Image (cartoon, rainbow, N blue to C red; front, side):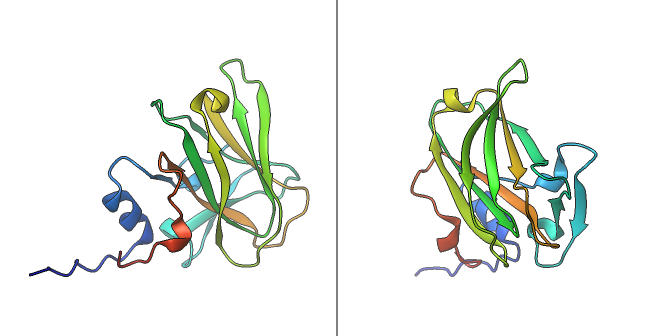
Length: 158
Protein backbone atom coordinates (compact mmCIF):
# COMPACT_ATOMS: atom_id res chain seq x y z
CA UNK A 1 0.00 0.00 0.00
CA UNK A 2 1.39 3.37 -1.02
CA UNK A 3 1.32 5.98 1.73
CA UNK A 4 0.49 9.47 0.44
CA UNK A 5 3.15 12.06 1.15
CA UNK A 6 2.62 14.47 4.00
CA UNK A 7 1.53 17.93 2.86
CA UNK A 8 4.41 20.29 2.36
CA UNK A 9 3.79 23.96 2.87
CA UNK A 10 6.86 25.75 1.55
CA UNK A 11 8.26 25.28 -1.96
CA UNK A 12 11.78 25.79 -0.62
CA UNK A 13 11.20 22.99 1.89
CA UNK A 14 10.11 20.69 -0.94
CA UNK A 15 13.31 21.33 -2.85
CA UNK A 16 15.62 20.96 0.11
CA UNK A 17 13.95 17.83 1.47
CA UNK A 18 13.39 15.90 -1.77
CA UNK A 19 16.89 16.54 -3.08
CA UNK A 20 19.32 16.00 -0.22
CA UNK A 21 22.45 17.01 -2.13
CA UNK A 22 21.05 18.68 -5.20
CA UNK A 23 19.63 21.17 -5.83
CA UNK A 24 20.71 23.73 -3.28
CA UNK A 25 18.23 26.57 -2.82
CA UNK A 26 19.86 29.83 -1.77
CA UNK A 27 17.84 32.78 -0.45
CA UNK A 28 19.57 35.99 -1.59
CA UNK A 29 18.13 37.96 1.33
CA UNK A 30 20.19 35.76 3.69
CA UNK A 31 23.39 37.17 2.17
CA UNK A 32 22.77 40.40 0.22
CA UNK A 33 25.77 41.59 -1.79
CA UNK A 34 26.29 45.08 -0.36
CA UNK A 35 24.65 48.13 1.18
CA UNK A 36 22.89 49.04 -2.08
CA UNK A 37 20.76 45.90 -1.85
CA UNK A 38 17.40 46.26 -0.14
CA UNK A 39 15.46 43.38 1.39
CA UNK A 40 11.78 43.61 0.50
CA UNK A 41 9.16 41.55 2.34
CA UNK A 42 6.44 39.96 0.21
CA UNK A 43 4.06 37.13 0.93
CA UNK A 44 4.48 35.55 -2.52
CA UNK A 45 8.26 35.47 -2.35
CA UNK A 46 10.21 32.36 -1.44
CA UNK A 47 11.10 32.70 2.24
CA UNK A 48 8.79 35.72 2.51
CA UNK A 49 11.21 38.27 1.07
CA UNK A 50 13.47 39.07 -1.88
CA UNK A 51 16.35 41.42 -2.74
CA UNK A 52 16.34 44.44 -4.99
CA UNK A 53 18.51 47.38 -5.89
CA UNK A 54 17.79 50.64 -7.67
CA UNK A 55 21.38 50.81 -8.93
CA UNK A 56 21.70 50.20 -12.69
CA UNK A 57 23.78 47.06 -13.28
CA UNK A 58 23.84 46.74 -9.51
CA UNK A 59 24.96 43.52 -7.86
CA UNK A 60 22.16 41.67 -6.09
CA UNK A 61 23.76 38.56 -4.66
CA UNK A 62 27.04 36.66 -4.38
CA UNK A 63 27.78 33.19 -3.05
CA UNK A 64 30.81 30.89 -2.96
CA UNK A 65 30.83 28.11 -5.53
CA UNK A 66 30.02 24.90 -3.60
CA UNK A 67 32.69 22.21 -3.39
CA UNK A 68 32.33 19.32 -5.82
CA UNK A 69 33.37 18.13 -9.23
CA UNK A 70 30.06 17.90 -11.09
CA UNK A 71 28.95 20.80 -13.31
CA UNK A 72 26.30 23.10 -11.83
CA UNK A 73 23.05 24.20 -13.43
CA UNK A 74 22.06 27.63 -12.12
CA UNK A 75 18.47 28.85 -11.86
CA UNK A 76 17.14 32.19 -10.62
CA UNK A 77 13.64 33.21 -9.58
CA UNK A 78 13.36 36.85 -10.60
CA UNK A 79 11.00 39.44 -12.02
CA UNK A 80 11.07 42.91 -13.51
CA UNK A 81 14.61 42.99 -14.94
CA UNK A 82 17.18 41.04 -16.89
CA UNK A 83 19.87 39.32 -14.81
CA UNK A 84 23.52 38.52 -15.45
CA UNK A 85 25.65 35.75 -13.97
CA UNK A 86 29.30 36.53 -13.31
CA UNK A 87 32.18 34.46 -11.94
CA UNK A 88 34.62 36.02 -9.48
CA UNK A 89 38.14 34.65 -9.02
CA UNK A 90 40.20 34.71 -5.83
CA UNK A 91 41.65 38.14 -6.75
CA UNK A 92 38.17 39.64 -7.20
CA UNK A 93 38.24 39.80 -11.01
CA UNK A 94 34.75 39.40 -12.48
CA UNK A 95 34.01 37.45 -15.66
CA UNK A 96 30.61 37.80 -17.33
CA UNK A 97 29.15 34.36 -18.05
CA UNK A 98 25.60 34.87 -19.28
CA UNK A 99 22.68 37.30 -19.42
CA UNK A 100 19.04 36.27 -19.21
CA UNK A 101 17.06 38.99 -20.95
CA UNK A 102 13.41 39.87 -20.53
CA UNK A 103 11.50 41.49 -17.72
CA UNK A 104 8.75 39.10 -16.58
CA UNK A 105 6.01 40.82 -14.57
CA UNK A 106 5.57 37.79 -12.28
CA UNK A 107 8.12 35.68 -10.40
CA UNK A 108 9.55 33.15 -12.85
CA UNK A 109 12.28 30.53 -12.76
CA UNK A 110 14.89 31.07 -15.47
CA UNK A 111 18.04 29.08 -16.13
CA UNK A 112 21.52 30.43 -16.80
CA UNK A 113 22.47 26.93 -18.01
CA UNK A 114 25.08 24.42 -16.89
CA UNK A 115 28.70 25.34 -16.14
CA UNK A 116 31.84 23.44 -15.18
CA UNK A 117 32.88 24.49 -11.69
CA UNK A 118 36.29 25.62 -12.93
CA UNK A 119 34.60 28.18 -15.18
CA UNK A 120 32.57 29.41 -12.20
CA UNK A 121 35.81 30.07 -10.29
CA UNK A 122 35.46 30.81 -6.56
CA UNK A 123 32.31 32.92 -6.29
CA UNK A 124 29.09 33.57 -8.24
CA UNK A 125 27.66 37.07 -8.64
CA UNK A 126 24.22 38.03 -9.98
CA UNK A 127 23.58 41.58 -11.15
CA UNK A 128 20.50 43.32 -12.55
CA UNK A 129 20.13 45.13 -15.86
CA UNK A 130 20.09 48.87 -16.45
CA UNK A 131 16.29 49.05 -16.56
CA UNK A 132 13.83 47.54 -14.12
CA UNK A 133 10.23 47.73 -13.01
CA UNK A 134 9.37 49.19 -9.61
CA UNK A 135 8.87 45.75 -8.01
CA UNK A 136 11.82 44.06 -9.74
CA UNK A 137 13.98 41.74 -7.70
CA UNK A 138 15.76 38.44 -7.13
CA UNK A 139 13.87 35.95 -4.99
CA UNK A 140 15.82 32.67 -5.00
CA UNK A 141 18.77 30.91 -6.62
CA UNK A 142 19.09 27.18 -7.24
CA UNK A 143 22.43 25.43 -7.76
CA UNK A 144 21.86 21.89 -9.08
CA UNK A 145 24.18 19.07 -10.10
CA UNK A 146 21.27 17.60 -12.09
CA UNK A 147 21.24 19.28 -15.54
CA UNK A 148 17.73 17.92 -16.11
CA UNK A 149 16.27 19.50 -12.99
CA UNK A 150 13.68 22.19 -13.74
CA UNK A 151 11.96 24.02 -10.86
CA UNK A 152 9.12 24.93 -13.25
CA UNK A 153 8.01 21.28 -13.19
CA UNK A 154 7.93 21.00 -9.40
CA UNK A 155 4.62 21.06 -7.60
CA UNK A 156 4.29 21.90 -3.91
CA UNK A 157 3.01 18.37 -3.23
CA UNK A 158 5.76 16.47 -5.09
